[in-house]
Image (cartoon, rainbow, N blue to C red; front, top):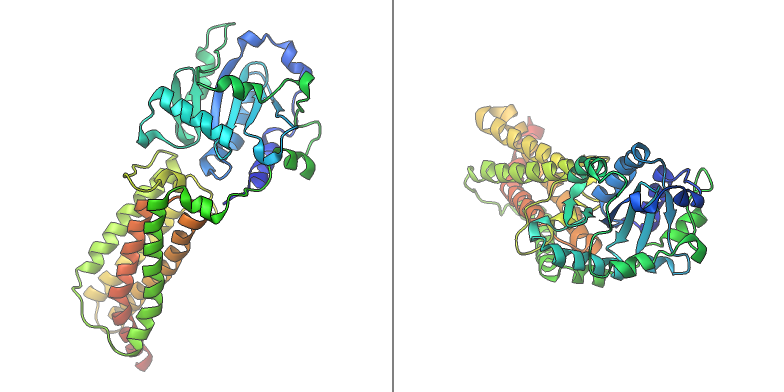
Length: 384
């Protein structure tokens, strides 16, 4: 899981390299500010995108760069709330990985009767309206500010407990410290904001015990398959299986991967069942590699595997064997990668995605179906 320190280091460096002096607040009529609450998690890639890529432009468009406030008297791991304001836009940031932030998040969820499929972060709350995800929030926030009553601003949303949250970020006279008298924040400033996430493996597993238990079962099955398949090949124990199962499982894998890739790329909420938390997984820092959503990579892998199988069915001799080897190699590599991803869910992210487990089962099934024929084809290619 991405540490709070690294998350806030990027946040501070990109958003608050040059903050307004504290006196800037008094230069603008406080009643004119648009006040919103932003729920986030340091492990959320969508949150990081909104904070680092979207909010700097919004602040610049409406009032200029903000000042940032937090209560420096708290231990770093206890800081749940930050205020960022330029007098026109005032954002109370609530970290849902800290107990006080979680409590406010749950109060807001109950107040607005937010359905399960709209749960997750980032969530922006404006009075009695809320917006979720890294697509919806950038689309709506500028219009909200523009539509606010001229000279009247927008009051804080009426979330039970918000008074305590606001009080947790005292004013400058009470000892709050603005971030950004320096051009580049140093390690000391970042450390004052956040410490590394100290949640234990047991705590993370306990966040989603049913879903994470299923993930462990799938993980054990995949590891056992990686060990058993080579042994069975060596002993010549592989029999024949219906060839139509390969394209069926490959198509299932492609469908799941494309769906997850679209969710990650668009920032939309995934449709989750009663078990697991797909959105927590998709919004984690592990949902993409080098900026490419895992789902997109998965769909490419399944597509190559399916192409190899089709080649083995339509071609003859050497080309057919090459297709079998390609399909088996991709299935083996895909299973190894799925082991890594499935391990992350219960033990690092602390949540499990049922879509991801479906893909893991599909690629493991494809390993069992393609490994024997691929090894036999490899032997024929070596002989020839």
